[in-house]
Image 1 (spheres, rainbow, N blue to C red):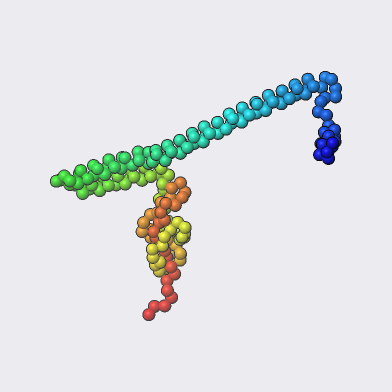
Image 2: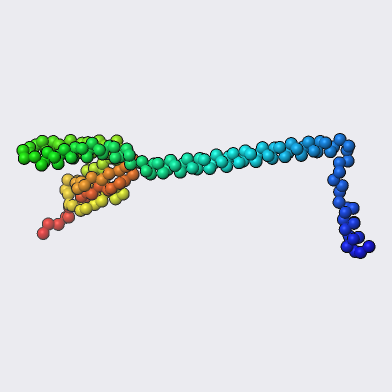
Length: 186
C-alpha cells in the first residue's frame, strides 16, 4: 500500500457516515427533502411571476410616458383653439372695406380674454409685481429710476409681465426699479 492509498483510506474512515442511525429516520428525511423541494419550486414560480409582472409594469409605464409625450399638449392645444378662431375672425374683419375700429378693438379684447382664460385653465398665471419689492428670482430689472415717492428697490413700473406655470417661473417680469434720489442738485 502506498502513502496516498493509506491517506485516502484514513480520510474515508474519518468521514461521518451519512446513513441514518435510526431505522425510521430515512423516510422522514426523504419526506422533508420532498417538502423542501416543493417549497423551492413554489418560490421559484412566485419569483418568475413577480419578474414577469415587473416587466409588464415597466412596459405599461413606458407606454404611458410615450402617450404623455405624444398627447401631453392636447389640453393646451384644445384650450388655444378658440383664440385661433377669434384671431381668424379678426383678420377676416380687418380685410373688409367697412372696418369699424371700435369693433376691432372689442374683438381684440375678447381674444385677449380668451387667451388669458385658456392660460389660467392650464395653470399659467401672470407675474405683475407693481409696488412689490424687487425679487431677482422673479423679476428682470431693465432700469433703476430715481423716485421720491417709492421705496428704494421697489418695482415702480412693469414693462412686460412675467408668467409662472403652477408656481414655476416661465418668464421673469421685466420691470423698472426705484432707487433713492440723488442728494445734490447742480
